[in-house]
Image (cartoon, rainbow over all chains, first blue to last red; front, side):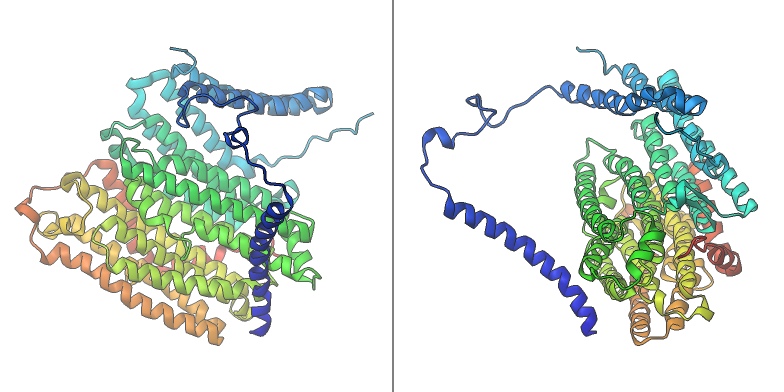
Length: 121
Length: 500
């Protein structure tokens, strides 16, 4: 039993260390850094540009769908580039496997097209 | 000069069930896209036929009998994998049967619904064969991501949104915890193959603390998936808000997939480190049984009651893990624990799917899943009431229904192990069986003794596919209870082929 408890003590120590690390690092940062607040510093950071509008900004949901479709092609490219470099080496096997992969991914595009997602209304 | 590429020898027979399911997915997508509104009704049929067709290669592989190991041991097709694949496919088929009218009546997105359902099942069949941390993780995500979407299928219903969001957030959190654990285990063992991990961590390692943390995190990740207490908090809300067929699917197939992964990881990867996981499973099993049952006592909604009862049932399935390492070799050793878990899963699938099918049949008329709505059911729909009685008493473990044998097998493993811890757990399990009987019986009491609310006693019309699902579940529950030899053989067969 004692050995068992000791084994689980590691889990507790582990959790404690994680909490302690956060506390330690933020305290250290607070102690070391100079503190000279200014109005300029306390506005929200937005890629170096002055933020415009309120904190509740809405954007077209279509951008999201296009981003998803982009992922489709992105994933395709990740596999196709290395495959294309060694095309001869992989022979017929590689051709068939990649064909299956592309056809299944293309089905996703056909789906988006039939459902009218590609039209920008 | 780059190295010469050797075409890998791929055993397509071993992959045939998965390939059949991918073909089903493609056909489903085509039917939905080409025929649009006119073909919607066909999607359920295509999904059903596809799932049944995928059972054929599972059977041919079982007849063939040889264990097949692919990709350097990362993907193994043995009897354990085949029994579970068959369970997932049949449970998926029953889910399609009970979904057909529900989804068609509700004017939900039918094509996508069955597509997601079959994708999730594909992940589960992969999970049954995955013997490698990466395969297990990929299979887990394959089965979970469609399930998150399915849980929120009634997208204009606030409870549906809550169901999906809770399931998604807690599921992702569990995945993250599990991945962290996997990375630690990989760091210690230097391999993702379960067999190699076993070799590395069972011989006296110098980094014991890391192994402990890794094992704990991985088990916690799967404890979320099988809704073990204290990681069960998502289950009742998700089960109540999801469409009822999906609730049935999650509580049976998804839970079975979690247990399939646990069996493989714990009994292959972590065997020899039972000093770490056995006490953890003991606590999980005892807590899950007790808390699940005690909260189930207070439920007034039948779906929530079944949700908590399925939490409690998971506790019984966790019990064999707690004692697996203590079972003497002449009583089957770890294999006996595997057999007990698989047997319980097979029987539980039939009775729980059946109970949900009755809930759906009754809800078609009463539009309610409150227990009070079940008053007088025996008077105006005796068939459904008797079936509900069969399923709930089977869940309670009353002989001669199948649930009795499931509990018997678990008690047998506990007593075979014979240690103080095992016997204590058996006592906890017995007490819980008695508590469970109380709320299961109260459902039966409501159906038989109470009058119908508002004296509404028109007959309940059960559509054909729902009736077929009820029939399959009832036959399974009665046959496995009357002839436990049938299921015992499956349970004994379901041994892991590649043990360390």
